[in-house]
Length: 98
Image (cartoon, rainbow, N blue to C red; front, side, top):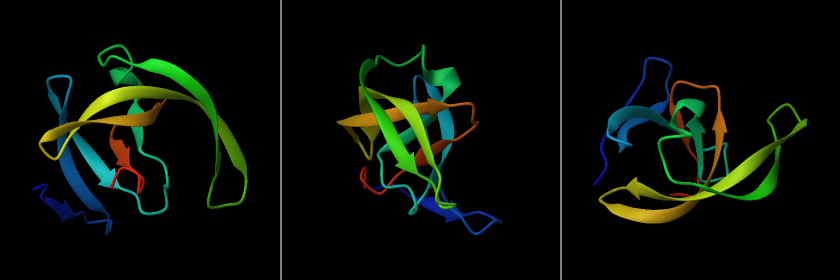
């Protein structure tokens, strides 16, 4: 079972072990994808480019990003997910992963 905290900003935060390191991860209920990972992890996890994804952000505008398939460790299992990579310092966990 994954356990977490509610941050001082009011966000649900968990810690995930990825590529041999622990990463803070925010559970983002406004994100309906699987994962957004830090760019730093792009060369450290085995990925396969699968698509160009289009997302509508809360402000109403759209962004496009490359989508990668990977096997991701989550809650004691390794599961197939689709992820994007961004210049961020923490992982975003979307509702599709949950």
